[in-house]
Amino acid sequence: MKYREHIFDRLQRFDWIMALSMFVLLAIGMAAVYSVDSAEGRALIYVPTQLIALTIGLVFFFILGSVHMTFFEASAKIGYVIAGALLVLVLIFGENVRGTVGWFRFGGLSFQPAEFAKAALVLYLAYMVSKQGRRFDRFHYIVRGGIPTFILIGLIMLQPDFGSALVLGGIWFGILFFSGAKKRYLGAIGLFVIIVFITGWFFFFAEYQKDRLRTFINIEADIQGAGYNVRQSIIAIGSGRLLGRGIGFGSQSQLHFLPEAQTDFIFAVIGEELGFIGVLTVFVLYALLLWRLITIAKMSPDDFSAYTIVGIACFFLIQIVFNIGGASGVLPVTGLTLPFLSYGGSSLVINLALMGMAESIAASAKRHESALTFLG
Image 1: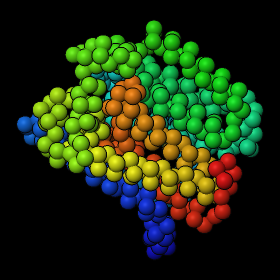
Image 2 (image 1 turned 90 degrees about the vertical axis):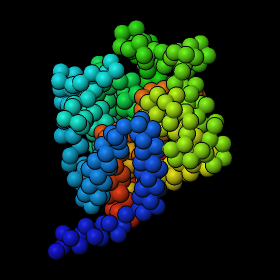
Image 3 (image 1 turned 45 degrees about the vertical axis):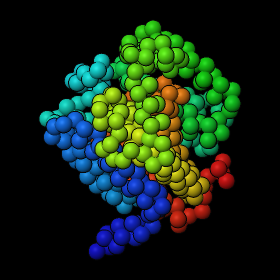
Image 4 (image 1 turned 180 degrees about the vertical axis):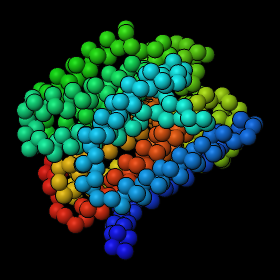
């Protein structure tokens, strides 16, 4: 009885503005995925799989949202170890999809360990920060977070999956930046990333990943080849005008001019079928979600909670910026999903699990004053 009352109490303390933003995004995403799926002229494939992932994800959302944040802190180290083990195992037993060995296949379902690794790194880095004693000015602080981060990045680049590696590095850099690490250390990290990128170009990047970068530099260079997807995406977004063509009536997505419309270019589908109003709605919902995360970080009762929220905010922000930037041609296409909107079971489940963690921390934060000073 007391346990039930505890869960009810925590649910009452949910940040429902953030949750409502998430639910509306999920509804828009399901409508867009349905539109793409129904255009294939066969029985629906994407929608049932996405509904299964949505159901699993919502279970995680409410369960994790009802447990105390100390559970996440206690699980941080074991979660990191599991993530590393899964990334090793997928290189041995994983399925190769378009040149990337990054998925376990179970019948009709698949699991991408890189998505779990993103969530695991958020918790591990937050745990590391909480044990640092706020000595964020020391080089030891950089090394202590950098080594575990680059272990996961190295394993992911062996797949290779540049997009996921980018997210992992961005989470680490974001936590360093907001915790107040010295600027010279951040500059050194930037230089190191450039060196790693150049090395990756010659030894790790697949040819299609190089093509994406070449296309970003000059989309017109190969308009019928590597630049085709981005060109069609830009056309789709522009053709939506103010109100859009309507769900299921987008010519680019419905007539198959837009490849990977359900994942990399779901934003283009929304732009074409829901128009400027739909795109603006998506931007407002993401802004609300990120604003609430920042607010929760300010209210958080301890460093672990605060930096977990910072990591979650960085996780979402990086994927939002690079997916939308790639679809609109202002950034290279990285293969990153658009949170809550793109088709992808592993991504959706992890997104919802992270939101559950954020809601758990929000419930605890409402009882405490902020212990976070850098955002104050």
